[in-house]
Length: 228
Image (cartoon, rainbow, N blue to C red; front, side):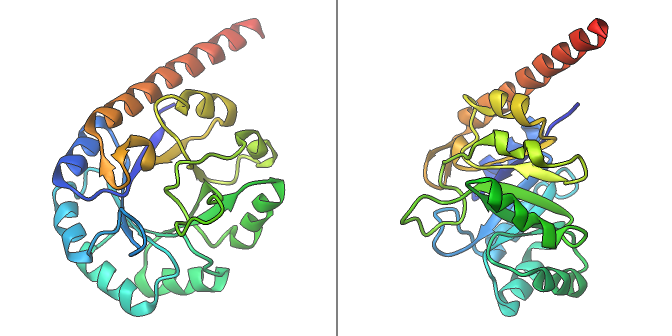
């Protein structure tokens, strides 16, 4: 099964072009001043025009107010909104109605109790992004390069559509996919040489590792099928 890959925190034409050339299904543009991946809406809009129709364009915000969201949607014309703050289910519903766009709701995970926060958004958010809780002292809700215990996701049933995020890179994506069976993944810091600086070689290695993981899982499934 083909894994959807979202490359988040894009800021340059070279990175955007390479992400799509490598097979990214989603491209993420971050609008959060505290992030080293922050980008101005007009700049993001120009980058998005290079790849429109080739990958989904995702606007990533953190408790953004209406004025900022209006500016982002006008400049970027995103395919999806990703809400990475403390937005309530009611706020998600409102934004879906106002902009007519599907919403990815980010949920920060450290332990099993955190997964219960998904429940109020079921039937409201179109997809979840399950990210690691930020380390103590971090001002960033995501992009911190840390992971959570992927085995916690065993409690989720197949009806929860999610993207796996949090510290994913070429070295651990195979294990992550094998343990979770995630159909979609998100990486940002895992393909960078420095905070906010996408590394084209690391992007290549990440996609290569995803392909190897898919092949290994398919082989394992085939062996299990023959055994039964």
